[in-house]
Amino acid sequence: MGPEKRQPTYFEGRVYAAVGEIPSGKVVTYQSLAHHLGCRSAQAVGQALKRNPFAPRIPCHRVVRADGSLGGYAGRDSGSRVAEKRCMLESEGVRFDSRGRLISMECLWCWPD
Image (cartoon, rainbow, N blue to C red; front, side):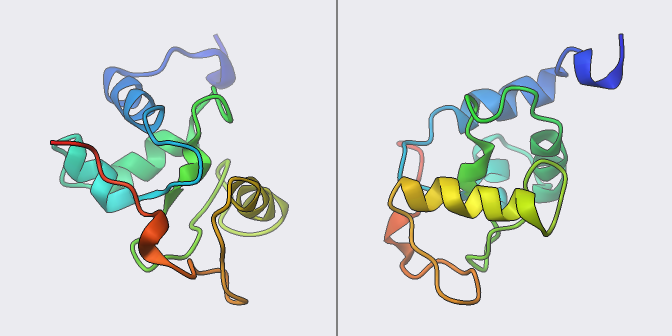
């Protein structure tokens, strides 16, 4: 089995399930997703999302950095893949300033308690 065919780990599966709950037009931060999962590492969440074989069905594009910037997409921190992430979010109604940061934090979503 090649790397693109491997089964997600238990942790990755939990990350993908949680991301699947984020509604269209909303975003969460890597840190809030980690907190929701009981994980102390936003970086671990980012690594799981980097390996998401189900994108965009599992909408990892809806996870952004704590400062409101886009963060990476499909294993890239810049370039056409990040532009694709921005385009998908904008098509869902999420707006960014000229620096690529969220214009309004109203699009931030939290899991119900």
